[in-house]
Image (spheres, rainbow, N blue to C red):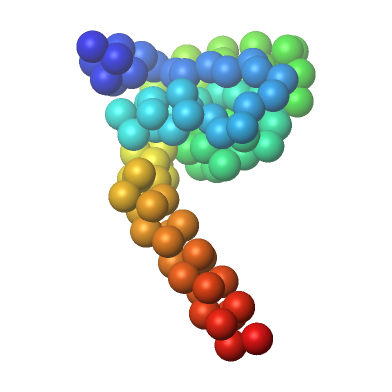
Length: 113
């Protein structure tokens, strides 16, 4: 059901002040929905500013960007397609693979040192 909601949404908006990772923005991007989000570290990983959505610095800018994207169907669709491509880079399998590669490299470094 969540996937259907993401796919039917025109935008995903997050005004969080702190995030470890913008999981909601990444999930919605994987469904082709662009995001408008506060410019914080966790959101910077999930949204490529101006490409997969928009990062903003305050409530006035957020309201303006939401309005702009809601009125610009073509831009919103382009960002949605880019969000889909960007989100495809992230998966639990890839995360596990990359983590194991880092751990293996560190083990080799310690063994040789």
